[in-house]
Amino acid sequence: MSPAGENLLRIAQVLKSNGTDGALIIGLQAFGPEDIDTQEPVFIYFDGLPVPFYFESFQEKGRNRALVRLTGVSSLKDAEELVGQGIFLQADALDGEEEGFEALIGWMLLDKNREEIGEITDFEDIPGNPCLYVETSRGQIMIPLHEELILEVDEERQQLVMDVPAGLLA
Image: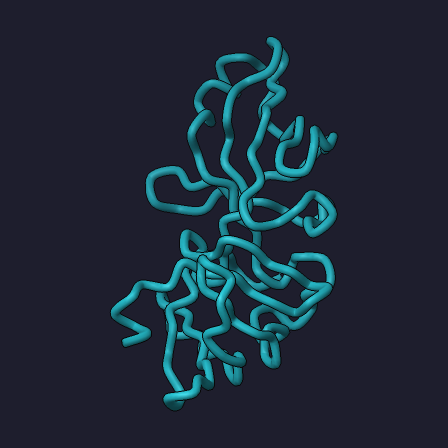
């Protein structure tokens, strides 16, 4: 596995601790529990650096929440330190995404209102700013692929729904 950092995608946020033995309730963002390979490490940032953790257990709680245990988190104090933190996964560790972001090539990009923007034609891994190239009716545009802009990933329909800043589409 390559070192983590530039190719991390935010998949969840720690919502709260659960009990006194380090269990956590996490809220999943843009991905369902079935999309996450629980055998791969997840990363939580401390002092600006991604620190790897492994799932000891992962129990779905509806479509967008899960009760989890992470390695090294074994007390209420440990769990409380993680509340509010983002949980990141290397993009190529998503189930069905062996190729990483390149797997999005050929997918349709939709805006937050689910209106078509265009077809994703390429991906460029610019350090700190990965971008998608999208062919629109007005030509090709480049859109930053930032995890906070991703609203939904629909593998079945091969659609990516993003909250694209209006200025990029003008």
